[in-house]
Image 1 (cartoon, one colour):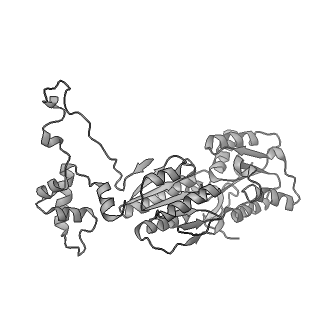
Image 2: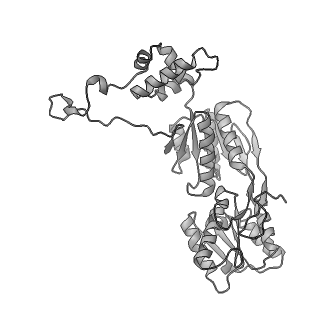
Image 3: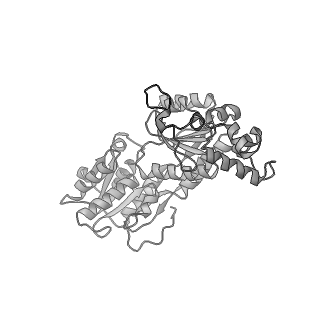
Amino acid sequence: MARTNADGSAANGGNGHLGNGNGNGNGNGHGGSAAARRRPTLRMVAELAGVSTATVSYVFSGRSGGGSGVAEATAKRVLEAAEQLNYRPNRAARTIRTGRSDTVQLSLHMLSDPWSLAVAAAVNEEANRHGLTTLILADGDWYAALDRVESDVAYLDGAIGTDDAERKVQALAERGQRLVVFSETLEPNGYDVIRSDAIPGCYLAMDHLLERHTAIGCLVAEDAVHAGEGSRYTPYLERMREHGLEVVPEHTATYANTQASAFTAAAALLSRDDRPTAIYATTDFAAIAAINAAHMLGLRVPHDVAVIGIGNTPDAQAVAPTLTTVGPTDFYRRQAEIIVSRALEPDDEFRLHEFAWSLVPGGSTDLDAPPRAARTP
């Protein structure tokens, strides 16, 4: 797991230099005196600050100031003493005492995806504002990780596609783990559900391309091709057929869930003699890869090839030209607030939070596109 502390710092253990190993016990200058090597305690902070241990505990609970009974000047003195001693509160003990871990865990399907990066950045920013630490699960075994490490809330993104996964989610909820689950199918059942159905937005994307193009290619994730009806590939097939347009098999390029794979697939598609004049990409990161591939091949976007993505990620605004995309508006900030709110104010009312999708025009389909503002169907 990758750990991001609320203050941006990383935890440090001791360096282990306790002596020279020859048994003379002089420390060889590496560890200093026994007092200097002793791990600082709450009592030592209290003595240095000239306050009681209860006051120090109260300050580190985050309740100092604002009429709590601990003056700001006293709290500042405690914090300065702690900094001087390099004291860090015992989180395990505090968790047992308060029932809180002050952590938010995120299980993200693909860490390199701009969508996942935007989720992590938004949640971390919101968590930091409330003194919480964000933990990102760097592997796919979210159930084992959540079973081992307690958190005030855990967010699960896109991993809930099987009956077994749903049973594991339910088991965690029944054990008291607070959860926020991103799902287009689940209903709240001991946990909150974030729903942002991509399929209507995918139809919007195809409709936008069909206003000007008939030779449209598809840059699609491999799993979407094999998922059957209801995947992000379906709107491409249906809209082409509804408009009486041929679905050319060679105009569908598949990629694995990596940016390198998407770039390779896009480059191959755009290198064809009969290349399409527009590309419908099933993720923003694949669309950005297509723009980069076009640049490499000397093609102009959108003059020679138009590109549209799916997701409305922040990276859509960072590419040149800006990426036309579809997605929910202000999704990342609002979702982060929901997740952190569940960590801070747990209750027994579990909610469904729905986000509608809109078309967000950019320069990758129209150089005369208006400023980036959502356009609903």
